[in-house]
Image: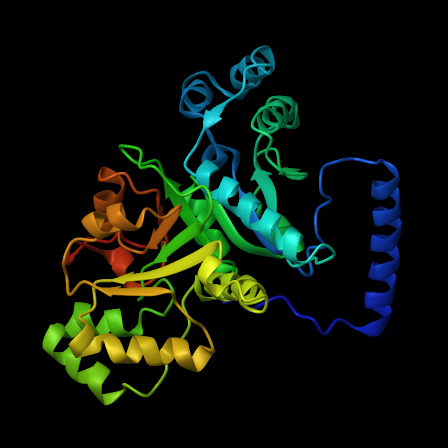
Length: 361
């Protein structure tokens, strides 16, 4: 899995990059724009969102699937002055922008901010409608990448992406395999009123923040063996999962608020929502986070109880889980959920092994 962005860049490369950024800053400052300039990718927490997660493009997608690319592009061009409706990632992006506002108040010259990149495989001609929609909602998204149907993975790496959100599960899987934190987003069945002042992010534990090593034992040997295993290895940290680095990035920004005595007024709050039992298997999870030097604001151990009702109370802007039945339960009760297609859980549905298609020779 990818780690935090490196600060130790070779001196010659660093010097050249600094000159380029200094020139870009001077040019931007001369424009006298009220819009804040994007931070350097090297220092930023970069969130790449697809157009279909940022906006609701169900009707447009139907045209593409039923009538083809040319009709789809023509429709988008014809309606380019009509703003697209918000999609599942929209509240999350707004919350990221709020955090940036607070950070700029405390650290006016800091580059450690969220940087939102629109990563879409749309045709470039569709870009006008996307730009118009972003401007309509006053979203701070200056960096676009329109790949024209090609895989975005190489671009994700070039943008130093910390998190990629898409509606395309295959691209998400490809990103995770490349070591990039990623998830497939789903629109909730109903809408919850979300916080305007605090970014709230909820994570499952196994196969999300942590590896699936313990979940393998549950699936293959049952709960009793799992409990014994977790007790035996309580002091051995779990290996990292695909979203660990994103929690790490959030923690880095949280500490900037703590340094200004803003812990109780921090605009970022994180939650662990796990099916584990606290008494039987919770200690290893908490000790793993401690060994990583990471904090979680709230930890909820549900001992197998449904997650949906608890998430309805938390009201996160996004909830990450590796198992689709938890995603379905969450979105049925109004939670914006994101599926992390990683680990042994992808071979099971509600505890039952899914018949896997035969591999081609």
